[in-house]
Length: 269
Length: 320
Ligand SMILES: Nc1ncnc2c1ncn2[C@@H]1O[C@H](COP(=O)(O)OP(=O)(O)OP(=O)(O)O)[C@@H](O)[C@H]1O
Ligand SMILES: [Mg+2]
Image 1 (cartoon, chains in turn yellow, purple):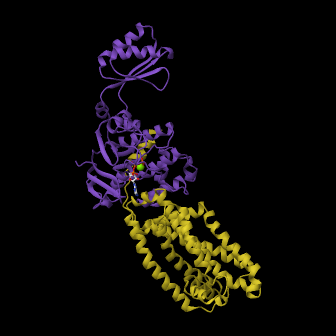
Image 2 (image 1 turned 120 degrees about the vertical axis):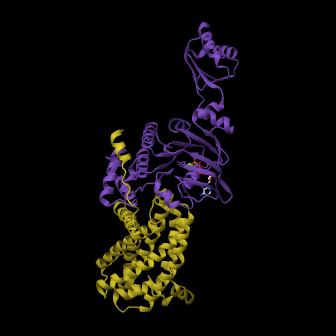
Image 3 (image 1 turned 60 degrees about the horizontal axis):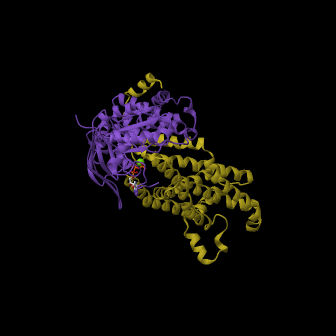
């Protein structure tokens, strides 16, 4: 080994002051973006499924459900974007769990940083991931013939609403990430909840033809409100009630689960 | 000057399991201190409490003069931990990992990049620095992990099993790095299951088993506590081993054991003064001797003498 280099590296006395909370969060957000760059597959493998569904549903059932595939696509696509983003939220928990298992969290926690920074930074990176995924699905939709009546601003507002709801839901998966042993079980547990949440909703069909009890369930599902709100925002004819409903639900979910997650984070110690 | 580490009755329970049950340690500043123990002894738990990652359930610990519970942040600012499993981000490159840690220590972007390059060079990772860590070998990963712990100069470095799973060459390399780090004045607390490693690196060591310190001292003191040096004999012709066996047993008055190979013998010598005559007797009886060595007992022997079971025996506490 080169002793002079080693000596120089080891005797360096540069000891800066600890970073501010914002700087720590931004650095950890940078890490999340690097991960998207190095492992883009992680972003795309969850998107294959929604895109496949879009194509299949549009051309297989579109005609039967809405008269024509083109009309059905206008109905379906906003919901598919919602579904994609919802599926991606699982990766917040998976990533956290992986970091804990790999001992990375130990390293972060032994650094003199604002302690919640690793979680907040990861969430920031996740928002980036959600936006990217939403963009890809919308572009696929446009190629297939999706024509949002409210144009770019409408689509952006809808995606913004989805991000708000998604970051609230992410806190639930963060808790799952703390509780279970492996990243795989975070995935299984979370999808067990996400599948009914996204399918028992109005993403694919208008609930009017469903049995009464199911209509009640669908109406209570926050994903239904998010989908209605997104449709409204994308096509014009805003469903203000649904937007408000989603915002309130997001605040409630965050208010309950974020403090719980932070408690677990500190308790680990 | 206060001690680098001072613990009193340090304890950690996980529900019904007592992982650490009352550990008293005193580690001098600037020393390399070894915590030696088998799987499940409580090494990692002890180190994590000292590094403020786990809250003790009993007793107290001061690290560099600060209480690990009440002044956790001050402890964190002065120590670094290299955990048992390389705590680096597999998806990032080696360089990005070091920049990340430097940024989280408060380095500006430019300074962080300079520091990363310096450390990659020092730890012989310059060439691999641009590759994702998932492509690194175990030894490279370990080196990167240690480098990440040295981005800012810690006063105390915790190394949890730094060489477990490494091949002999990588292990030697890590040992060299640990010596160099200690030579710069950093106190090092390392845990290991390897008796040889503790012997080679540590000025003082504590043997822990089932959450308790069962012996403490320099490795020389610990070996002396076993009593009796080990005699290893290798005869030129395996056919003659039995004759040598009988002769030595008679002359030394100690029990002899066959070694692992057909031409070796082993004895714990209680009367060393008889050894020269025994060697002479072998030659005069026409038994050619290829090796005849009186060695210090190994730490393995120490462990056996202390616990009644070998260091690598399966214990009931053993957890995968
Ligand atoms: N989070 C935990 N929950 C429950 N028990 C635990 C936990 N962490 C450690 N233990 C138990 O505490 C005991 C000591 O574990 P520890 O990891 O400190 O041992 P170790 O000496 O580091 O072992 P190894 O050489 O295998 O790393 C073991 O019996 C282990 O099962
Ligand atoms: Mg351990």
